[in-house]
Length: 212
Image (cartoon, rainbow, N blue to C red; front, side, top):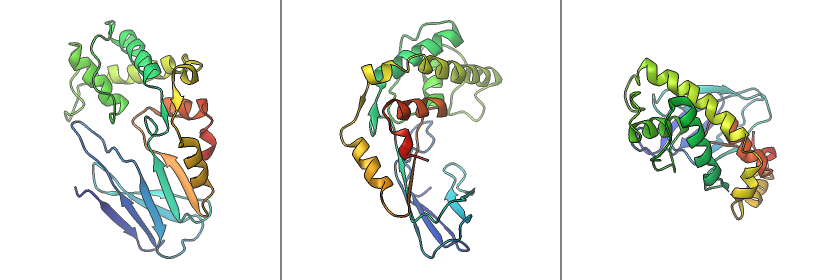
């Protein structure tokens, strides 16, 4: 895959540039996607994105007004820093699913929650396959599904700690507000966090209103 993968939807006149960075066992760590119209697209037109793993376009219907700029933000260490709360939630979810304490924790930055689970399992001698294998094994997938549920529960239980033990990074709110004020702009997030936890992070610091 090239660093910049470009796809054009001729009918809707949309040009998308996607800049992924790859690492071991990694899904794309995409930080910003710039999207601009080559010609005005009708309301309800289709925006074409390039699938990061498959390279095949994924059609996403858009029912709102024409978008001339699409900005995607990373959450952790770009908008907020809630690493302490996240580590506590990881540890609790891991213990509930495996019955073992989380003694060794891998590098978290740039990894998805599923990656983190499988790497935690490997570091703590819990056999369930690896995120990089084609099939992590039925047992591993079942553990992962349970882990995702427990991770969401553990994180929600620490909702009040997000602002107490975490912080909004300098300039994050101002940047999101300025982007939201741009004509024809829409912004959302690309993150390795599970959906529920990503929403919790944004809501805790009053950022959720800026993102679709």
